[in-house]
Amino acid sequence: MKVVNRKARYNYEILEKIEAGIVLSGPEVKSIKEGRIKLDDAFVKYLNGELWLVNAHIHPYKFADVRNYEPARSRKLLFHRQEILSLQKKIEGRNLTLVPLTCYNKGPKIKLDIGIGRGKKHWEKREKIKKRDLNKEIERTLKHR
Image (cartoon, rainbow, N blue to C red; front, top):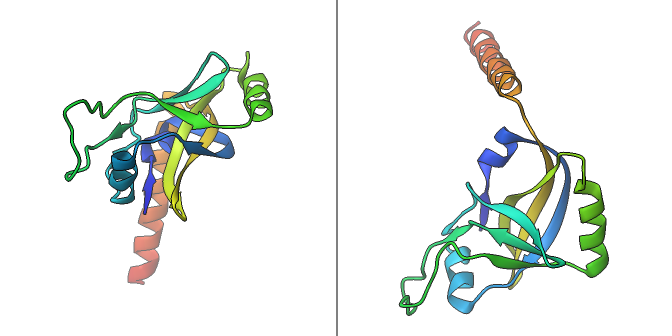
């Protein structure tokens, strides 16, 4: 199972990738292993010396009790203290942000790839779309000849 945040690569220029663990409950793990997580609007926030995954939507597991379940609650990310401090120094004052890229299982554990990214401007996004469309057109013409 691997869930990719496609909006992240579109909206941000990813400079570096880091792997992190997530603190989850049992039904959340089962739901993620089924691929029922949305990272589209999610981001990583630094609070009180810890990193938190905010706004990631994990759908409720269908066989679990869902009375007190919040699908979009904040979830703690597992990092060593020194890793958190180095990330904070990299991001601080340089207009960078932490963005979740992919969520996948590594054996019995759920991992999250986090990217250090710089936001793209609108003209950069349009330029990327133009290049992609031009390459598709070239591929089509070469294929038909």
